[in-house]
Amino acid sequence: MSGQRWTISGGGWGMGRLRWLTAGESHGPALIAILEGVPAGVPLSQDDIDRELARRQRGYGRGGRMKIERDRAEVLAGVRWGRTTGAPITVKIGNRDWENWRRLLEPFGKPPPDYRPVTVPRPGHADLAGHLKYGHRDLRDVIERASARETAARVALGAMAKRFLRELGVGIASHVVSIHTAAAEVDVLSLGIAPEEINARADRSPVRCLDPAAEAQMVARIDAARAEGDTVGGVFEVVAFGVPPGLGSYIQWDRRLDGRLAQALLSIPGVKGVEIGLGFQAAEMYGSEVHDEIFYAEGRGTYRETDRAGGLEGGVTNGEPLRVRAAMKPIPTLAKPLRSVDLVTKEEVLAHRERSDVCAVPAAAIVGEAMVALVLADAVLERFGGDSLEAVKRNLAADRG
Image 1: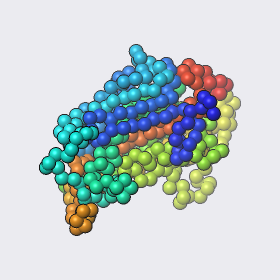
Image 2: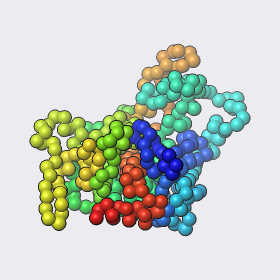
Image 3: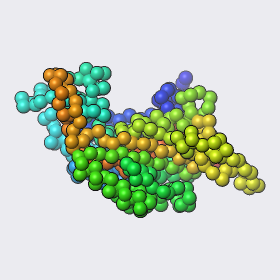
Image 4: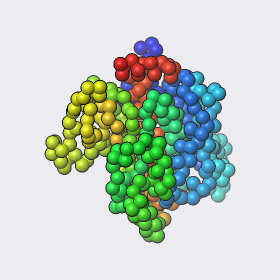
């Protein structure tokens, strides 16, 4: 067992190379993230991280919190003069709203005399489940950690994984496929553009949509929901280009890359469904319409003319672009609160309300990019190894022959 690193991967323990943790509360002093296993020598700049954090904060339908926070990463360890050292990378993201919450969330001391615990769980949130699991009598202890604010730390870690993958020729992009019933009619692969340009185009849209007609409909759906005190969800797609074949494994259930990707994306707050390639659509089609035929040409080797499998077969990448989609439910905090029960009095009341967004699908797409990047970076290191970037590149080049 000596020399092996173990990480939770796809729901079980697997021999991976990346380990990461986040800590911090939504309105606490800061979020902290630690990423271990990034090889030495990976170029990394402040902008590589802060650019991704800024992308997460944009999007039509976001709430007041985004007007308060201006996320910036403070790298505390693991990077020197713009290069990773191979040591664990530690990042701090301060919460500007902390000063407004300090007296309610201080680690030590006693609650203020006028403090009223949160005792009404919000339907659709982790409030009641957290109470039943941990026994919290004040749901504030659940709300602060279960909050989607934690995803800012994931995006910071994902930015590092994306920078590492970029050095290996792997690019990751995302775009919004639908919001409520408004859906884009765009096949991102048919555009024939690089992932950087896909992201640039998507980022210019207020809802990160590549279809201008659908964009207008999406904005209208968000406006309608806001006017009714309601919220809307949607679907986003993450596409990875240049992914080496052979990542993942069919040897054990927990090493299948499709399972690892699904677990990573489903861990994003609000995501309730994940599909790869044709996904659920394939269940309504004939096999002759679903599977990607294989061809061969001198100088090119085997290749496909379609990518309905989404770049994965048998839990292993096949060299085609990796395509995953995630469905995000409407945010459960509504301006017109749903009915709930006070856990102390047992009386029916309207749910406790926190400051919230009307739609966060564009932001969730950025979190999705980060999660896919972390899973792929772990799978690359699992397959090709190497404690330095140059060693990983050598191993990858040798595999490609």
